[in-house]
Length: 406
Ligand code: ADP
Ligand code: ASP
Ligand code: MG
Image (tube, rainbow, N blue to C red; front, top):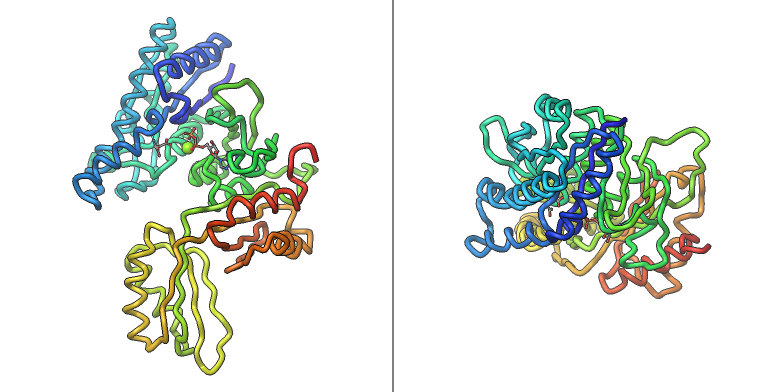
């Protein structure tokens, strides 16, 4: 008998029929003798709908009130699932994040979990009930409702598993595991049986939306065995664990991409100490996160400076940059919000040379121009025009022998 935390995503609870089938799955696991804590997302599309409502009132809604609003989606599904379980003869009880007491900081819309009180859940489990918890939400010290950022129910699941020292955290979604790349973009993508926390962390942070990045951080920090599975088909899914001695290491474990990027360039900046600080300081002060940064070698005592930001921050960053550029006496500011980032990820890269050149060759063969490059020990990222996203991902998938059947 094990203690298992299961998380069901939006599509998995997208209709009453689907909620009924989740109830069946949960009851079956309980009949098999396991203790279960179940985390659910809002019904698919619901969080987007609520955000649209808020933006209909104010394009930049008050963050505290936005959290009050968007946390309601999960309150609906915990109640419906508990009713469905009860109807199945499976005793269950639902809790919001605040009721469990998932304590977070006060960063509305992107709060971090600080502490979880496991007592209440343990009492229910001891009394034979399934505990159903709303994903994506918590409460701060002052009692305000907070949310954990898009995709945050994954993090709720893993954090509960860590707090309860569960035997496994199972993330049920609409694909049957973690693939070499998004199977919606590359039909030849292959499911991975295992992937390390480190690789999954890179994949998630480089754009693979199958798991929220913070959920992987949590799993890695507390060593929570994490599994991604389909709520629609049977199968073992993908296990995410720590790197083990002797575990066969693929050169490349996957390809991630991010469509939410935009790039900005200041041309002809005087090449002096402090320039990077003067350009990026005001961007950071405006709470805009910078991703890649490239500065050219100076010619004629001036240089060009390029960086990328989230597409939502593009206009704001451009506005700030124009002001900075004129203060610095730079020649020109340019920008492009129709770019994407494609990344190769693999711990096997550490010990192999030549991966970058294979990557660049595959892109060149398709006539894809690389705008920016950035590398780390276990990843290589390139920025290319948005129109080349699918072509680029497919070309790399096949160049590195990742296509199914190879
Ligand atoms: P949920 O609503 O269950 O949380 P998400 O939409 O957040 O589901 O995540 C699942 C989706 O992630 C899949 O439908 C798939 O399109 C996408 N995805 C992106 N990259 C990958 C990958 N490498 N492996 C599997 N799925 C991926
Ligand atoms: N419902 C939230 C979202 O759509 C949280 C989640 O599904 O993980 O982002
Ligand atoms: Mg998700």
